[in-house]
Length: 131
Image 1 (cartoon, rainbow, N blue to C red):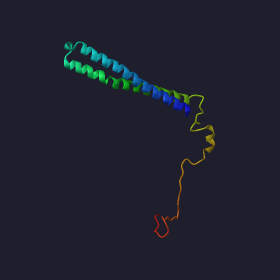
Image 2 (cartoon, one colour):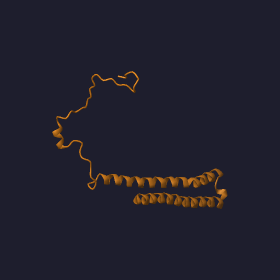
Image 3 (cartoon, rainbow, N blue to C red):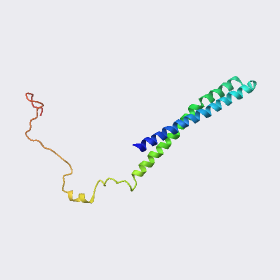
Image 4 (tube, helix red, strand yellow):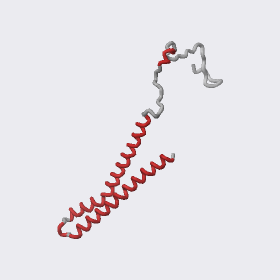
């Protein structure tokens, strides 16, 4: 449990750090975009400036999504590694479905069957028979 908690905390911290780093980068890009537009207002058309500002402000969403994808991918690789370890020689595997000693059970019936003869079943005393 301690190992799982440690790895889970690391994964969550990595994701949170990715969001923080993306937000810092996005803030720098948005600030640089605003300063570039304000430095030479006449050079940029209003529509182009609006699109540049819009994209610079939604950049944190895309960087956070990218961080989430990377963290999920890393976690998935860890899960794959565990699955491959469980298939290895260090883990005791279940026996095969059919074993050589099963040959002694050759006369065992392959299917079960119950036959009732002259049976009457009721749900409770006082009711008519159901069968």
